[in-house]
Length: 290
Image (cartoon, rainbow, N blue to C red; front, side, top):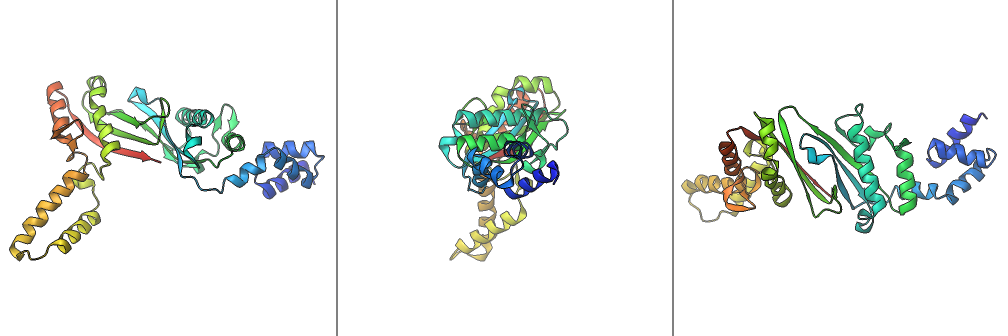
């Protein structure tokens, strides 16, 4: 067989990367069995097997989020909270988020399948991931990523109980559209409470229009089932009142502001807009959790 045929056979057998297979064969005179043993001894096969284990911990990693105009979020999972706080794992998360952020070719959002050609410090992502799994001893999975940028909006982000300056188990992003980006950027610190609101209160949508109709119908059905000995002519009024309460509690704009429960998020945003003579509207929101 040619050298490439040997490499292909070893890759098919072990699932290891091309560089690892090439080195294993070179060290063992193209002996497939000896190359497999070599890979096992080096911990590379061990890493491959770990990639089937369940991941329930990890981090949400932000890169360049202090800019409020363009940054990247990546969600990476591992097996234990101990590893999630490990410096090597956090360093990988930062390097990965940076590489995604700086890559102009990949999709604006996606998962690990969209990152097959990505390199971290001039090394293919798959190899970097295998090296980390071998070193740390846990399965590590790249779940998703998203790049944020807009000409007419600013982005406010928040990381709750941070492991370091850019990683946490809970993170949120709120996109605020505006007619004056320069002034809006100066208000970023004041508006940060809205991103905090998303992490703390986990709203289901921005407003009523962003809540799925099925969710509202299910809530209505629950209210009806809970009503006993209620006159028919009173039911519609009660349902309307309870649905309004549900929407206030579960929509971002309807919720009471966490720092001042006497006002809603909507009234807070209106107040900031009016006092600074600009338009501020929530265009989108994302909540990331592990």
